[in-house]
Length: 420
Image (cartoon, rainbow, N blue to C red; front, top):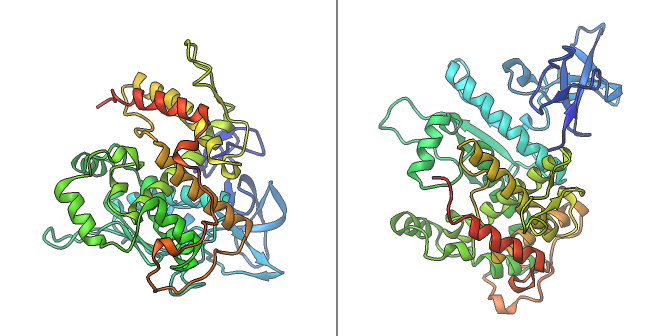
C-alpha cells in the first residue's frame, strides 16, 4: 500500500486513520482515486451531512453508513448526475456485506471493526489490481458477498467455519480475537494466520470461479490451470480428510507455497492467490518508503533490491520475486531482532513461482479486458491432452532467471533455522 499524508498539513497517515492527529481534520478514503483525503464540512439546505475532499473538491461526498460504528472511513458521492443518493449509503467495500454480527454485543462490535479493517485492505488491493467484484445485487447468483458470523452461545452447537461458497465468503468472528486465532494457528501447525490472510485466501476461491471456471471446462485457461495445479475434479472432501488424517505429503515444499496448498488444486490456487496479494502489497509499501535492500555482507549485491516499479502492474512475475525475496530477508531479520516470528515464514520454489506467474497473468488479462479463453462445454469432462496450447504462457520451473535461482537458494537455506 502506498503512503498517505494529510493534504492540509502534511502529517503522515495510516490507511485506517479517520482524523489527522496533527491538524484534527476529518479524513475519508476516495476509492476511485485511492487517496485518503482531508475533508471540509459542507453546509447544505437539505440537512444532509456532506463533505468536500481536498483531493477532489469538484464534488461533495458522504461517509459510508458504517462510519456510525467506527468501522469504515470510505466515502461515496453525495450526488450522482445532480440527483441525491441514498442518505445512508454503503461504500464500495461495505456494499458487499450480507450479514454482520449482533452489534448490540460490545465484543462483537470490537471484533467486527477488526474484520472490516482487514476487508477494506483487501478491497484496496482488488481496486489496485482492477479486478471485477460485482455485488450480490448486481449478480444474484455469483456476486461477491460476505457473512461475518459469531459462534452460537451453545458450546455443543456447530461452530462457524470460515470459507467460500459460490461467491459468498463467510468469516468466523473468532478469527478477529488475537488470542483465539493464535491458539488455532498453533493447533493447526500453521506458520501464518491473520485476518487479512483469510480474506486474501477466500477471495482467491472467488476469483478461481470468476477467472478460471467461467472460461469453460475445455478452455486453454483451464488446461493451463490443471497442468500447473492439478485436476480440481478430484474429490475435495476425500482430499481434505486425507490431509487432516495423515498430514501433508512428504516433499510438499517442492511444489506448493504452503502445506495447506497441497490439499487440493482449489486450495493450491487460493493459497497462491493470497501470496500473490501479499507480495504486491508488501512491495508497494516498501517502495512507498523508498526502501532499498543492500546488505553489508560479501553476498550483499546478490541479496540487494530496489523497488522502483509499480508491483500491482509489474511486467513479469520475476520482477516481483527478485524484489520480494531480499525484502523478506531484511524484514525477517528485523523481526528476529525483536524476538518476533518471521514476517514471511515461507520458502518459494520454482514450481510455486510458476503458479504465481499464472495468477499474475490472470490479473493482467482481467485488467486489460482481454476476452476470456476459448469457451467450451461447462460441465463436459475434457481430457487434458485434447486441450490446445495454453493461452497463458507461464514460467517453466527450469526457466527462472539466474538472479531468481540464486535468491531461492539463499532463501531456502535461511529458512532452515526459523524462530519457533
